[in-house]
Image (cartoon, rainbow, N blue to C red):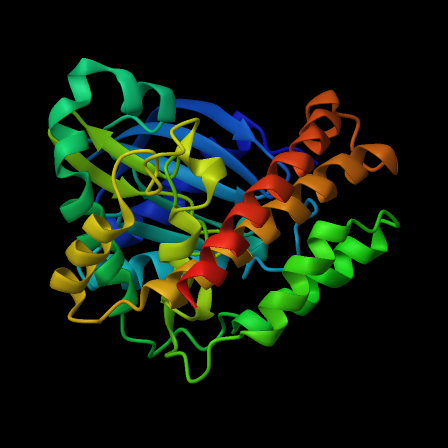
Amino acid sequence: MAVTVEQIEQVIPGLVEPVMGNRCLLQQCRRLTAGASADTWWLQATVGQQQHQWILRLDAGGEDLGMAPGKQWEARAQQAAADAGCATATVIAELGEDSGLGCGYLMAALPGESLPPVLLKSPAYDTARRRFPDQVAGALAAIHRTPLTGLDGLPVLDARRQLEQLYAMHRDYGEPLPVFALAYGWLKDHVPENASLTLVHGDFRLGNFLFTESGLSGILDWELTHLGDPMEDLGWLCVNAWRFGRRAKPVAGLTQREVFHAAYEAASGRPVDPVHARYWELLGTFKWGVICQYQAYSYLRGRVSSVERAAIGRRVAETEYDMLICLKELQDAA
């Protein structure tokens, strides 16, 4: 059952007041999105004499790919990364099942823009684009140095586990595609050995970065966070789907891999093996292809009545092309 404004007005003051030590008066409350996995709201409140703007993320109870840790662990990972120096929103309070709103969390609202077409094209963001490599690499380095103490409830998703899970999903759709089989075989034969285990954002890409005109203000959307190989985030950032038509600039359509890798190494002290990162770029492309199938079959199997979901199925062919390009470049580098 959908959460209402009235329910939020009843619950949030009682949640905030013990944390912030003052009376809370909600002034505005509006829904931002009501997606399959998260119901997101923008709130404005006065606490004592101070004005506050918050984001409330609630578990929508919908379908997912079986990789999401749940809102409680999402909140804890986000706050742990913030404590480690990542630019992201501070978590104010967690909500449990018995909160009256279901599971979720309340966090500070950050200023900025996240829409890729605006960030890529608007002259207003020239400075932000110039600062992108150093600032985003710095945020990613902070995520990967986050202490894992207290994050034992996050799933551990290494390359092999993700690959087998994704290929099983692909086969379940009853539409075997040769390029997927080819990529799966290569990825299975070249799983990185002895990869370090860190906090991984899981959806680190343009669209989940918030920028003001002066630069990065926050990393968004932690719902796929997990423990795994840090190179996963570097690879996902370079998947062609997140370049938004700028294929020649592999990192988010903004810069070259070598530039970003150098910035990440400087920020993290962790060396980047380009082939290791490209492995995850291929696995990320494979993952996006399976997600496109998943979206389409959610419609075709009658689970979700959404023309948008159905239309995403056409992008499977794009991912096949991208996988072949990535495979060729990996083989050339071998």
